[in-house]
Image (tube, rainbow, N blue to C red; front, side, top):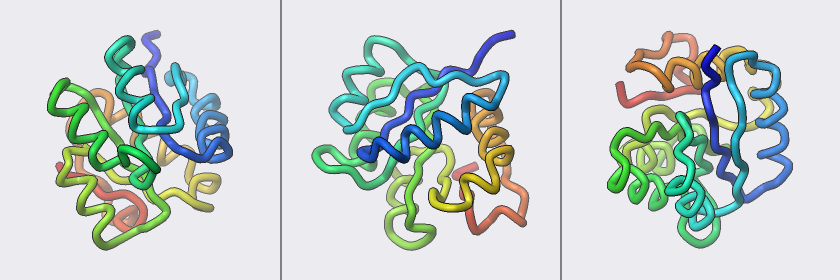
Length: 143
């Protein structure tokens, strides 16, 4: 079985640890790296390209929006899933315009919806999709 490799990019260690734990429950996925900044993400990606990059939108330094732009400019085949606690407005729109393939709202929903996010990651790694309507509040996509 081919595992979907995932890089977690978030400046909060607790968030990264929680997401890593949820991904560990998915038999076809593996976190290959956890970094706390856009700068670290860029260094990591150019040495070991993961299938999926889960990117926090708001981080100090090079934020998630600019990091996503740089990654996709240099590696157009990269798959970025943007993440933020802000569910609507400017931040999700900016991440999607920067090239993120999907947007996931972080927060308490992660624990209740881990299978949904696992599915999001698995499908994002392999093909374009359209999100089911009932998920519109927590997941958005450019497809």
